[in-house]
Each structure stands twice: as C-alpha cells, then as structure tokens.
Amino acid sequence: MKFNIVTIFPDLIDSFCNIAFIHTAITKKLISIEPINLRSFSEDKHNRVDDKVYGGGPGMVLKYEPIKKAILSLKNRGKVIYLTPQGKPLNQKRLKSLSNLDNLTILCGRYEGVDERIIREFVDEEISLGDYVISGGEIASMVIIEGITRLLPGVVDDYESINQDSFQKGILDFPHYTRPDNIDNHPIPEVLLSGNHIEIKKWRRKQSLGVTWHKRPELLKNVKLSEEDDKLLKEYISEFKENGRK
Image (spheres, rainbow, N blue to C red):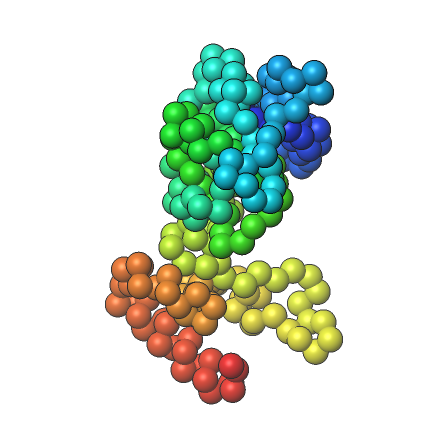
C-alpha cells in the first residue's frame, strides 16, 4: 500500500518512517510512504503556500493552486483524505476499510485550513481524530498510517494479537499482565496461571465485556450479545459491585 502525504513539513513524515514497525513495513516493501513537499509547488519566490483569509479575520489559509499541483502530480493518488476537525470521527471500522486500498493520499492542513475549493474539487473524504484541534494534519496522518499499517498481513509478527485489540470486535480489550505474578501485594488473577485455556478464554471474554460496560457502555448498544455473553456480563457487574468499585 502506498501513502502520499501532502505537507509543508516533510521532515516530520521522514522521521516517522524510521520508527518501529513502520520502518519494518517499509523495509519489507509492504507499504511505501512518500512525503509531498507542498512548498515545491509554490510559484512564490519565498515558496509561500498560504495567504490571508478573504473577508478578514485572524490566521492564514493554504492556497488552492499549490495544493492542486501537488495532487495532480501524483500518478496514483487513490482516495484523497483531508484531515480536519470537521470530518467524520476516525474509528477502527474506517481504518479496516482504508486498509483495503492500494493508494491513499492524505492532505495535511495547517493554520486555518485549506481553501474550501480544494475540498470541493479534490477531496474524497474528510476525517477527524476527535472533537479537538491541533496545529496541523501531520500527526493525525501518522495516526492513520500506523492504524492502517498494523492491520496489513505480514507487518505485525503475531497477527492474532491484532484481532484481540480494542474495537476490533466492537468491544474493548481484556486486561493484560506480565511477570512477576505478584508485585506490591497485587497478584494476577489465578485463572491466568491455571493452564486451562478454556477457562482463560472465558475469563478474557468476561473481562472484555465488563471493561466495555464500565468504561465505554455506549459500545455495547452496537454489539449483539449471546446468551453466554449476557451471563458473563451480569457476573462481571455483580462482582464489580460486590467489590465496591466505582
């Protein structure tokens, strides 16, 4: 899969390419990431790509022409995404859908954003990381690239761990523990030391349902629970209340 990142800070993307499994995925040629320096498409002698807002007001806006040239320079741009607080919130389902593409172009905004005519003419989809604002789309693009890349076969050694991640099946992940099995008088659940994989699987499902009920109850509205799931969740809630947890 190829990612084209249109940005005024290509060095940020270059640094990201050298980190952890992103670098591994590039080395294995499972993905490629090409930063597109927007300033290279400026006709201004100072390589400026922004200008004042029509109608007055604070801030600057990225201009239409250099963005147009940058996008049209791409032979295989695929779907074009613009990262903006006005976009639809990113979720795991969207990442899975995007992971099926061969080419993805991400437009990173800055300042007050981009000329609206770019969105109308070239952008296929607007995506937001959430209801907050950061200074530009570069970090957001890294979130999307990492979220997609880890879903691609061959990138993560233990692919089964991906299937157990939070949101993969509509609910949150179960708690994880590692050695030592007792630290500061906090032992791990005995079932995890039992070697009984059927009971461990049952415990993990119960915890996933319970953690979702406790932390993100709205997610359960979109999950079809089996009779066994319903029983496990009721057990978790009962134990949760008995232990006096809030």
